[in-house]
Length: 126
Image (cartoon, rainbow, N blue to C red; front, side, top):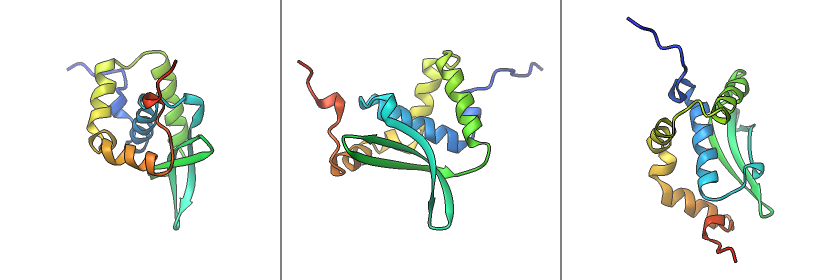
């Protein structure tokens, strides 16, 4: 039996997958990569990892799971491999469509709009 040597995007932890999906959702809506941050904060008595949009003088935080020490190195590995095009478009789309953000697109977009964000994809460029 042949063992698989290449790590798939779905082999990363659920928290890192969630970070990637939130980041990707914001990119697909037209927000700039420089306005999207991965970080952590305390919520109640739990440290959580998050994907945060900071633009238009506003902030939108997507909680992506409980923080673990290895998350940022795991995130860095996923980003590096993604930038080297090591994941197929089909693999990335399958992950993106498997998560609650795209399945609840309306709620995700509504939450951004209710915070006062103007969605870049909806602004006509002249």
